[in-house]
Image 1 (cartoon, rainbow, N blue to C red):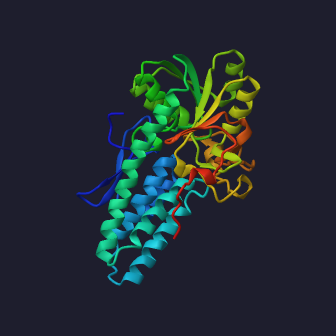
Image 2: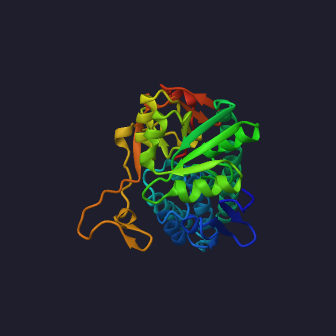
Image 3: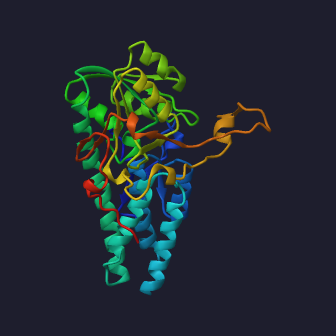
Amino acid sequence: MNEPATIAWDEGSGCIRYIDQTQLPGHFSVVECRTVDRLATAIRRLEIRGAPALGVAGAFGVALAAVICTKKDRAAFFSDIRRSGDLLASTRPTAINLSWGINRVLAAMEGADSVTGAQTVAVAEALAIAHEDDACCHAIGDYGAALLQASCTVLTHCNAGALASTAWGTALGVIRSAVGQGKDVRVIACETRPLLQGARLTAWELARDGIDVTVVTDSMAAHLMRAGEIDCVVVGADRITSDEVFNKIGTYMHAVCARHHGIPFYVAAPLSTFDSDHMGQDIIIEERARDEVATCGARTTVPDGVKVKNPAFDATPMGLVTAIITERGVLRPPIDMKGLNIHRPTT
């Protein structure tokens, strides 16, 4: 994309600038965020979303809390910053990248010998995380592109693109890298009910890049697989345990259908999305508001008084995953989490 980064630190004003994804595709809006409370609201409302982008948002959120904090006493200062970190971490319990970004900046700040020093370290570490995200997604893209045929149709779900990272994307990064290598890639984007991140965001990104994209309803995927119109599935992830991949609700359905039809099912995600401390059964799946399902725009689609379930994510058993594409290369299940040597800061 030629637009500003999905989320960035404005060094001149000391604020966070991000693309408000709830306004797309109809309106392109960049928001200047100057308080941690506003950032927490943005994350809850999905103005900022996507695993890698949430990691960067968490990091920038701690940096913002540090920069605007007026406490001079070191203990009081760190108490405030940790409280801000806890607030941000509580906004999206399933997405592990958010707490990873928060904890990494907090851990870096611990080594500072003064409040001023901690503020400087916070900004520097957050900027480093954002820079690493760009390099990480490009590496994922390059490794993943090698798995795609010279001419192929890829099914993807939700949005794991530039809008879900700083600029390149994970699942869509694979597609972008493959196209950049001259491969003929066509994309089928599932609309991704209930908030239509595939239709609103993935289609918007790919169309702007000139990549062939067609939007379908989520329920059409199995039909297209059976008809031989899908060569592989590539999705992102919000958390990966040794036994399950957590991603946008509907991912599990695509994995089951892909396995039945002998179609490769790939997950593209950075190592910061891996959770070596928990099993799938330990993970809380975020339940979101009724209105997301019961309304579409200004129109009511479910009668008043009728119950709605709205889990934001589901869990795909690792046995249905062909491979996980990371910045270190392609991993094929079973995954040896300890062997990956993933450093996850804790505070």
